[in-house]
Image (cartoon, rainbow, N blue to C red; front, side, top):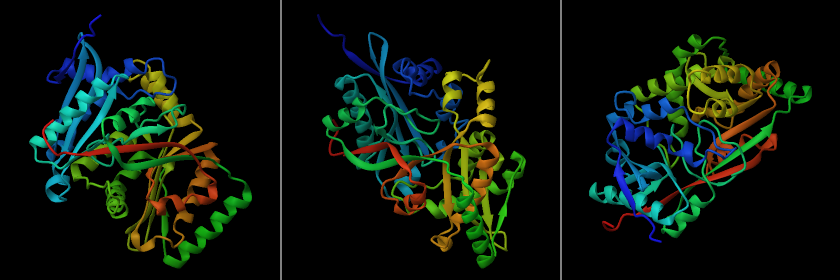
Length: 382
């Protein structure tokens, strides 16, 4: 019996784009750990009229088909700020999913390699998105752990394909969780330390109870995000329009009490932390659609989920290792007690980011997931 040939086609139409976005829904239809993204948000990612990243980035999307059945997908991405301004000649790829057939993954990656060669780039790395605010990495540990809304899930064979095809580890991310231990001795310790640090450095906490109260501070938070994360190897700056895009995308989903912000006497941002309730179960129930019941599941999770994701945390470089995080932990302790939070998950953190790992030592975190990006030099047109 002759196996049908695999063919690649570039996404050109709205129907193609919908097939691209929905392929994982078919690939992981029976997987209890995969968490469906919202289909419309995925479509918006690749719409230059919706996503301002296209001011300095490009994408080309491809489907692998066998007898017109989609068996794989990949997004070939170039961030021109990274290439031209930072001098990092990287060809990115993301949204990479495929059946367990080495011919499928090979053809998809060769197409990315070819585009990189045509654009005079030096190496291919992925899976990554357009920027640090996008999803990253192939899961290499934690296949029986439920996914979340800000990371990709994949089957165990993905990493094996990368290795067989000559790709090597570029970077590795760790994910941890810890049970929220809020007995009085611990919470009072945070409070005492927080008060000392606030007095010593003349700091104050800005608390939020409504989403509209947060908005005037979001730009300051992203400015501090830039100062905190710009030394990481994977960092690419965000434009003002991108910041507004992520503001609209995420802030509405976050309980205002779970955003913490610290400033000095002059109103300068010193520290921030953003956690959001887990939407994993709600997204599984929504199955990619906000209507007719998706909004209902998400709103219930926003109010009732007892698990949270530590999305971002940052401390101004001048105040790092000065105990400022005690203020953040004290604030979260009060919010978590009030809302009955039981477990906190930390989203992907670079394995080399020792400063961020050291923040959590006393919480006895459990490393339950690992993920990697892979790279390969571009030496010739395949």
